[in-house]
Image (cartoon, rainbow over all chains, first blue to last red; front, side):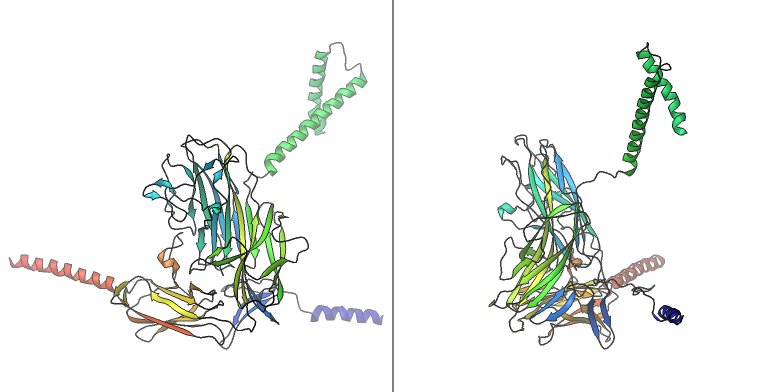
Length: 241
Length: 372
């Protein structure tokens, strides 16, 4: 009987004394804290006499020191739960059957989430021109030519049906300023020609969701040999430093 | 019950059909044959029922056919390592595949600064003394591995600094790249490869000391009317972009901290904190300050206002002194810069003068007509 009473008292004690398990409130009607280190708590704490940047509960996050090295992970001036993320809506950009002097276009969307990365860039480079296995090549475009001659870093108008080649245009967020409208195109830099990748999206402002559309365009002449013309375009998204 | 009601007329139809084909047979007089026909009838009924269900299922539950997409996430996006020669550390990364299943390849390549805006240029070949490897049992660098949709892979990256390495900075990117889809025969196509990166900044120092040589290369306002060498005038209602660029001629990266102060002719002062972004060795960087006014840049990344350190907005009048003080940590030099600008309500004054001229003109003409 005495054991039973002790057991009851113990249960009551446990129930009354131990506090509730609760989440750390991180917002109110006036503020909301977003933290890069979401496991327990993270962010800046400050008063008139101190300022502290802490990271708790995440592997290799924040700053720690040991004999011989110091490691900092992430951007100390940013406290965002948005990870660095890169998406391409369609990685198979098919032109269908190419018809001479009839430009074919295909599009794909690039999306970057970079709240936790400060700023970002997306570059593009082709792993060689559009070519068949027998090495017939659709050359990179130079747009309409003359005053409208484009290159890897400058978009110009490409609207003539007799201007042949392969290139791309852009619309949307954070794109280069020379893509003035949908008639402006550039050729891709060619890795096999040791050219540097072209920056196709970049921003120095923190953002959540930035998206652009890449329009691929190919136009062939009537003497272009038949075949399956293929290439690979490498889009590289990197945060800043 | 429903089955019987439905099946009953179909059974009759089936019976009639067989009778018509085999007029010598009477189903009613051959019970075994009748049960066989009923069995076939049931089979056909079940077949049609199954077909109906599958048909409905196809339209209700199947999703739209969609293009093959990739979506990758890699964290942390930046790693700063200050380390002695002969030491090694292990860092855990997390790679998420939020798109279609894909094969991924991990590699490390060095990078250099591309401009003063924080953009980088990744070099095509590995170089430098830092050694990288993976501690994962089932992963190695430059070997493809499969990651399913919504799959996550922890990457245990070991960074090792050999002995007797010269002090200095080395910058790398950890890159995760997808394998492009297989080519479609018979058509022209471009296949896209997606690569996501995370930057690694390594400072090697045997003594623990670093070599930084900061200098303000540009601290000025943009736009406005320039008189003489460096006296700038703005309209009182203009948004005023401020540009602050710092160059680092040292061998190690540095992290600026400080403020930009705006002091008016009545002594009023506003302070803006400089965002502590890294300035790599032997490079320069446009700094940013906050809180800054913002302007609508559209989608163009290189609009004039969008690449400034700070945008001042408000109603300015008189002489203003902009100054900055930048520190780079303990035992490091503090650098200063200042510039001035003037603001007057040119537009309002011009409007008032124009209005006065028009009124005077009208009145003088009115009085002249009265005099005549």
